[in-house]
Image (cartoon, rainbow over all chains, first blue to last red; front, side, top):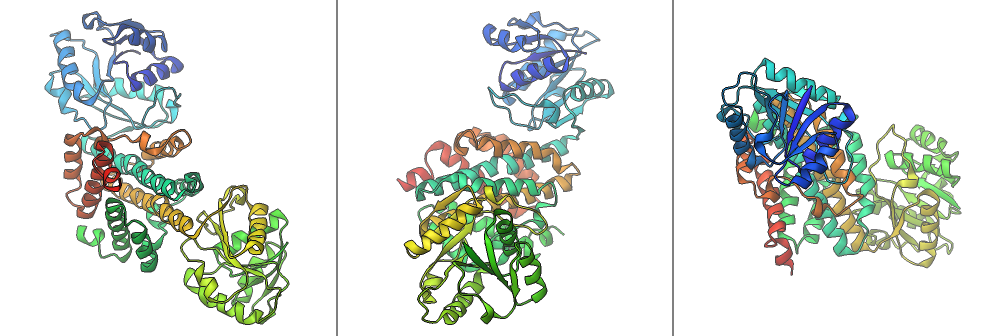
Length: 270
Length: 270
């Protein structure tokens, strides 16, 4: 199958490299900056283009690897370029947060979502085979193309509805962004106390490794679930100079305790 | 060096096994339940005792591997047993949360803290060499014994003050307990949406792996730090049926944004 990539950022770079390694033919890489486009294209042996009208419409699939708020505009430009031609490429965006309706609104014929559920950094090779790819499509033809590309790149492909993808994106914020923020807080506290933050790393790895064996809710430990109010009070005291960390500590502890006691979320939901 | 272990729980079990593997001589393992004491003692070739007065006072070090709220009582019992004898063993507790003053109050001569910064589960072997051990002591003699045992068992030994240990314990709650709770929330959300939670695991592993390369605060991603209010609003809507998760989402997002804008914690502290 032949694909083209719109964009030259982190994700475009990783995708071009992954296509190169997996033998997916990348026709073109488009970017406003000709130098960047060239660099990204080189990773998969594609041609670099900076003129939007040079886009080859014989590609099976076009990946919109652009910022979320640029997706709608790009989709409109592509729809205008394709015009009324019957055999349009399938156009996908790569965003967890952006509704597929943005592509529908651009009056594209075949479109969908190709969302790699991983965060990508520059300068670090990613084993794409292990990156879960969540896909969705406007129709069977689009789904076939999107699914084919996803399976060529990854061993973990999952077809998800709009609502499922939004929930996954929300859950990813808890798992990734909020966890990172908790680590930031821990680092600030240990820095202030002059103790090495790295002492906490084995503990964190253990928490993550446990996920392979059991549900996190069955693995909950700590003062909140033990109802150890003396320790909680000591911790709140230690956080005296950090009012927002205190708020977070109190709310997270309360949330843990309520789940344990069965008087919180579970009941409220039932 | 010769040690004895008081207790037959998870930590006592792991310690006995680690001593066995590292060639640390364990004289005795004490437990009220004779069968359990026997099982734990067998891991290091120690003698099992269930009579407290059978405790051999020629040990260099006695490890109080008991629940936090049993430490004071045990310390008092040991002090009573030792009486006025000059060459008392060093007594340590293994708790991150418990003040060393609890041992001082028992009028022991030499005491300290030996806190393995890891959470231990039954049925899973732990590579103790990689478990950070935070130590503290009442005096040089105690410190020498405690430090010797710690270094025999682990490659990562750190002498910490009372305040540093308390801060580490607090930071561990953020890193371990609160992170686990975020994972619990994610799992509940994905379960409800009928999507596999495991899709989020590579993302979590990436978040943890990043810690080896940079500070978490420099790695923060997500809608909050981007100021992507549209996505935040969509997520809050998705959480409509979960008032406490909403509260947590809002507070964590606010905390992330305030750090980014430099108008929050950093300034309040300065």
